[in-house]
Image (cartoon, rainbow, N blue to C red; front, side, top):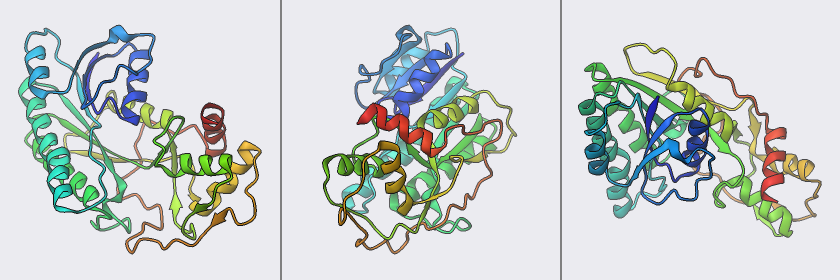
Length: 295
């Protein structure tokens, strides 16, 4: 089996490439930056790398085998709404998705897997995007429906929840908490009453892999991909402390930041849970693995 993966140099992309090559899947990679840092014992399974759709189209035109799935991970996650951000988010999250959809149709790839965000709804019921980024991701979901309903290819939308894991980007909550705990520096947060559903990176990648294999309805299939438990943000620092054996000192954790006006307080997926898959890593186990690798 062969697949195309966009965003292969991102956090999910790098981990997904490892899983795919371990499963003997041939990968065509589209990425804005080099993925030479991807470590795998099966580099020969990554058979083409480029940052240009045109280059991939030309390469695939000379191949006998058509990839089975387009896995579209690439996205711009800018949470601002400045004029420059409007242009960049439109180009990266909407226009690029349309170009990939056209490529998928023209080459005859039967399935398009699109990873999206649950933050397109702040209440779990209505379309109420938390950020412009979330709005552009939902817009891409809607555009992909046209291709699915036109019977060009099957569409699978996976709304990924709160991903964490080793070597995650330092701007994320858990790496920031680990850094403050280790260095003894002050960490400022909100009151932490909002719920999160931590999804370990290995579980997320397994769900994406399974989405390339499972049977699907003709209509666009939209699913939520969640971790195995719901926690409060305010409980995360203590769980990390227990797992690491390090204690927060008095005054080190400050809950003096205001929440956003449109903060997502509850875990309420709009889409049904992804079938044929179950997350296996609970936070206590996942965070211990992160600590072993990152601390």
